[in-house]
Length: 97
Image 1 (cartoon, one colour):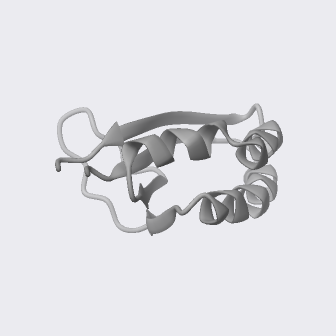
Image 2 (cartoon, rainbow, N blue to C red; image 1 turned 90 degrees about the vertical axis):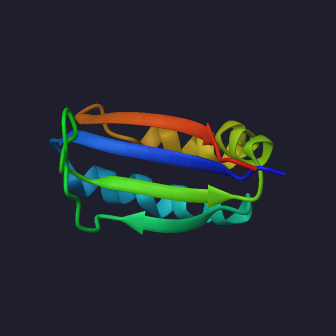
């Protein structure tokens, strides 16, 4: 079964303190849903139209599990805390089996 991944890129963060509040809610929600943090704020070498701002990569055992984690009540509560001043490109992708 192919794994599932959350890929988040943050082109703009105008309120880092509120982003921290979101992270405090999101981390346990993701962990409870079986997500494993693979990368956050690590070094980035961007090519073509890529950006070097904050990138987060989370792995799940399956694509279905990754979608369910996003739709979970706990994660939806975390999303409410995500500040308006944060620009985020968020995707759920299926890995190669």
